[in-house]
Amino acid sequence: MRVQIDFYSYFKDLTGCARAFAALPPGSTIADLLRHLYVRFPKLAPMQRATLIAVGVEYQKPDYMLQDGDEVALFPPVQGG
Amino acid sequence: MKRELVLTTSRIDEATLLEQRTMSRGMGAVVCFVGVVRVDEAGQAIAALEYETFQPMAQHQFARLFDELEKRWPVESVRLVHRLGVVPVNEPSLWVEIIAPHRGEAFAACQFLIDEMKRVVPIWKKPVAYTSLTTPQ
Image 1 (cartoon, rainbow over the protein chains, first blue to last red):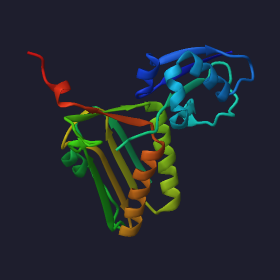
Image 2 (image 1 turned 45 degrees about the vertical axis):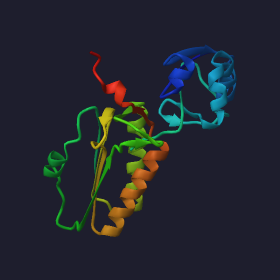
Image 3 (image 1 turned 90 degrees about the vertical axis):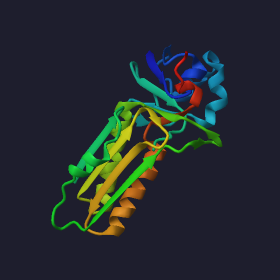
C-alpha cells in the first residue's frame, strides 16, 4: 500500500521536503511508517518524542493501522497564539 | 451557539470585529482576548513571528474545541481570529471573543479555548529576525 506523508513546521527543514510517499506492506502501523521514515530521513529520528502524528485531520497513536491512500501528517508540538 | 473562525493572512481589524458583535439581552459578559507578538522570543529580539498552519486539521480541531466549549458552558457566541504568515511585533496574532450570561463562564471558556488551542490546533510559529525583513540595497 502507498501512503502520503506531509511534514509541517521545521520538520520540512529536517526532511528537506514538504511531502513524501511511502510504500508499506498491508497491515502496517504508524510505528512501522516511522521506522521507515527514520531510515529515510535520519534527522527526524532525534525528534521522536516531540513528534505529533495525524491521519487525515485526527491525531493518531503509533499502533494505528494504516490504510492504502492514507494522508499522514508529522509535525512538532503546536504553538498557536 | 454562534461560532466564527477566521484563519487569515490579513491584519486583525479589532474595530471591525467589535462593530460586528451581536448579543442577546440575556447575555451579561463579553470576554475579549488579544494575543500580540512580543519583541523577544526565546531571549532574542525579533522583528516578527511567521505563523504556519495545517488548515483543514486546524479547522477540524477548532470545531471540536467549540463543541467541547458549548457542552461545558452556556456560551452564546465564540469568535476566534488567528493570523497566519508574517505578523510584526506589536500586532495581534490572535483575537478571541466569548459571550456568555456571566463573567465566570466567559472567562473560563476563553481560558479553556486558548489553552486547548495551544495544545491541539496545528499552528506553528517561527521568529523572523530584523535582518530578514530588511530590504536588500
